[in-house]
Length: 350
Image (tube, helix red, strand yellow):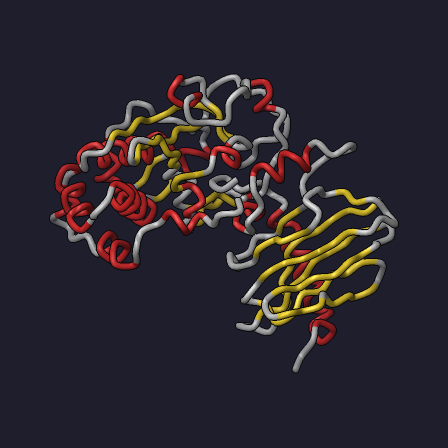
């Protein structure tokens, strides 16, 4: 059976390249103890949404009627609309790169016909489809820490739009733009992210804020625009890995906090952080516990001080106690599917 050392030369090359690529802040995902998938619909609903015929996609009312024809609950209705929008509408990267991050004059029918838009079009189409499906829904405008937004940026104008939809009497957060894909290296990558379907307020507070009164009835209370602007950047990979917004808030209050741990892009959404440092800078000589649950990996190692330390595996749980010296700690996993290593997390130790 191959081990990490067998891939050492290639792995170093891989780390160098991925460090360059993924140091850029994601646009549409910018990572809860409850997985986002718990709120999504059934595979049957998904197949129904993605099989929409051309005649059903000819108008917003016709599309809404088709999408919810098999829906049994309000959650089903919202999900099947979210899923269709995420699949059929692409982000207008050319408009975005030209500085047109908003398009408040666009209509839902125009977005449906063009199948491309910036955030206003996504949120407007979701709103109109949901309204035709009998749901109570609003479109919000506000501020988002997205692709290329430096930490502690002061927002002079609104740069994003998203939705609130009332489900069983409770308003829930939906961002169809960020749920459909993201921008990396000035290129758009379509990738469904259920994290932004019924997004958790404690998570979304790091990335979204609006002056709209509707928002303040749903979002974490007491956060002003100035406080939002100073919120640290959060990679959505942490949320995918099961880290709650409350845990990140607590980590951000750690004395000397500078940033959260660096997360490499990964498709292993079954990887869950059970116990590990969330801060990006560790203290040399201090003991830390690293504990993960993952089905996709054969082994996980921590590389530090020139040593490869395998985490002990018990079933699908990997764990170790580390006391690293100055330098970096890289957490790397070797997948069952490919047998090759992939970078997961990186810390700086001082």
